[in-house]
Length: 217
Image (cartoon, rainbow, N blue to C red; front, side, top):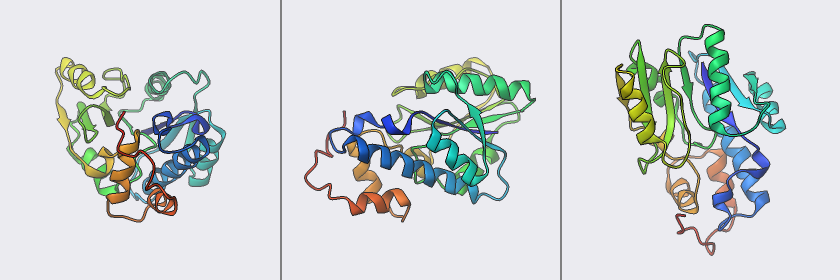
């Protein structure tokens, strides 16, 4: 099963505040999620996909793409949402889970296929962000092999947890999945990257030239 955790889209991407106002941040978050779900929908041999969310817009998008929804009733954090969803997957007998975020608009089908091709029968696959600090995809087999703890510096803790299981852990560097949009500098990367995603077209319509996009923090 593929799990896509989605918190409140209207309050998303606070670290982009130096470059975008709240309405623009919400629109970008919705558009990036649409890009991610569009890619997932074009994958012919995809496993079941569930959005883990209580956000009304995300639920509408899930229905639009005919994906399922796992209700995130507590709405506390991405970490809590995935823990709840993982427990549900285990109760249903799911053998593995792949967690990906909704803010990686350049994700490609071949990258998803590569993850499953490289996945050990029992073990994990981790895809780090470009800076090596975050985790932008995490496959676990069995589904609850180790807990996931998301945040700005999640990759090293995830790698340590995976290795502690004494089962194989594959680390893949995948360019589309690696670019998550968290801070203003990431907007530059998205604009400079080849492609015509909805998110890229949205940014190109906005006049961002005089905004402090160079700020990383």
